[in-house]
Image (tube, rainbow, N blue to C red):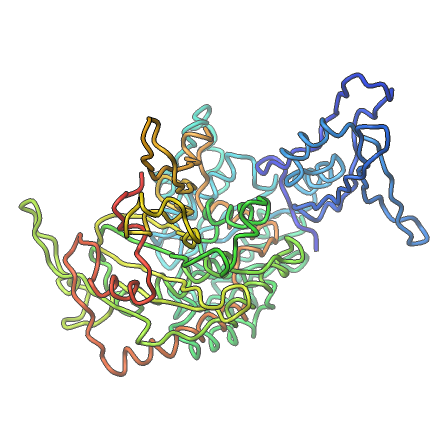
Length: 603
């Protein structure tokens, strides 16, 4: 089935004509044409830097289309090496050919196809705050196909006009693109409609199908259903949508929000039920953290920079930390949270998915299945968590500056005497050749001293360091550290040791800093924008496959059951503090210091 793609919003610059400086060798071709497949967004150019005698040139070998007899031809084009190296440095990793751009544009403007996006649970907070604004942002950036319709579906009684009024309150335009904002909003809202119905009603979904067909106007219909509803009604909605409102002549895809069960058994049951009505390639299990810019950049940072890939192993890395913190509590939403807790809500999905991306081997290609295969290998190589490698906590009431902050159990939606952890820290290990013995520390909590999410890579000490005396006994102060700040205020920086200018020999710890707000003027898209666009285009790299889910739950299910069966009492920590003291002892057991609590707090 064809995928409707857009070239307007995702920039993969083509190789531009190259003007060669004058050379004794005479004429140099003015451009290089690379063939490609229009179905791929990511291209891999195989470039051979072949020495040429008596010249300063290289041969760029390009794949040509297959001939009628099935044979492939290759052409070697001489190109000036200095110019080419500069060109490749900036553009090799992200470009499309003119052929691909034209092919994708034809899909984007296809008069015979349409895309219908149905937000199931349209009256909920997630739909209002994230999904509709993300869809509008895609529309504003010309990322949606020419013929698209958005339907809200929920039990609430609402008219089209009332839906548009509700949605309009949450729409915003890019800071750097305010022109015609109101006009764009009006155009977008005209594409939004509403249908009220029960989630388990075949009849109501059949009525939705009738409305969708009216707007598709006889075109080939591609349908995306976003399930923004509680997990206990996933199956009912999928069953009805599949049998009564799926596409008859295009693709049908379903985005499923976490939680994907509470443990291995419930997750497997959910997957089995979904597969009664959908194929695996129709199910898009969304983890919005995988759509965040810095997580998306993780593999680029590692695999496209020579200085990092050779260091990415136990030989040079001492420990890796994945840290998530919120500076607020449940705020009246403890009912949902108490049923899952911080381990299921954050660690088992968000942080573990980032860990798998961080630790995976180099995939065969950037194809979704190749990347997900490597992630599964990492998860299957990990030791299941045990109580001895974990610390749990729960925030308690605290008064600061004359303001009293409530305890977790003060939330009226939380059962009295609840032992559900609002904080957890754990040490995980990957038993493979690359990572054997390296502790991967996770820490996640609510009501802490700051809000943020980051990855910290602490490198080993320099053997026989000539400057150890300058740092004294605290060798951790001399440790290089790579920090990837996922949110807020996105940044990547490397901590290095540096001599302070002057006649003496005083060392300082400095940062080589890529601060996104300072480096890039463009506003960073919300994670939901990227993931929704991927789902429309059929790109699955950032969505979770069923075997990934099974492997992830197998790591956490034993310790979760033990915590609940033994009713382990969490360590209490004050609202707004740095978390339980036990987390520091856990890190110290592996000769690690949490990077976010260091003396030189990061900018």
